[in-house]
Length: 344
Image (cartoon, rainbow, N blue to C red; front, side, top):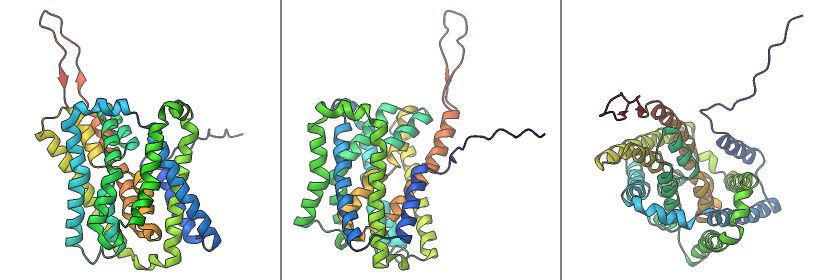
């Protein structure tokens, strides 16, 4: 009898993030079974409640002490914020000027919205850690970006996108009620329930992801009901991917160059590249749902595509930098012996 070969456990491909795969599956579900009628109203209400829960949990998890301690690296954090909220919007405007037909309508609005979304926290910290960078700096940079993004993203979106996003009195109330108020409530209750949230991180993590998936489903269901996908041809989709690739390449080149000119050490340079080139899906999707309402389907497409692209490219960079990290050679015997660091 032939011996059966032992089956290898399933491993997710490194180039494809499982959460992004879940997002793609959610989009496919919305395309096949979009919510309509009473179901649409129910899912939209649930989506709004999920956004409130997300930003409440963001507030509970944010450590005020760590945030204040990170202010000592003011030069690094300033450069990262300039990349996130100045460089990216400028690149978005240039892209619209160079390719107006390709980025017409909500795709252009989505690209501009992508450009004003804050940086990530979890993925930038994980990538910084893998590459051998300054983890504490990455945590603080992502935190500052998220905090500033609560105000900067809606304001910049209204300024750059114009008619697609209007900060009317009703819009301001929605932003305050669904973003600011839950976040502030989470900060105020952090001392009482922060320990509980930290201990149950494995349970609440899937709640976060499920909430964002619900937001995506509602947005793309509305897009299907409105027939917006008929406006996205394969040529436009490929063109959008090319634009996003150039955007990421410029952001990576800019952050590396500026970090070197600023005289940052290697761990700080890694943190700047990973934080300054990333855009947050977790913050961006709920914000888009609040700002665009029922028109968010195409507006979030550039962000979703860019997020997967940034993970693939930055994971490759992190792996390469980890292999070229400084290595301490054995110290020679003698009175003048000292460890020598080799930067590969």
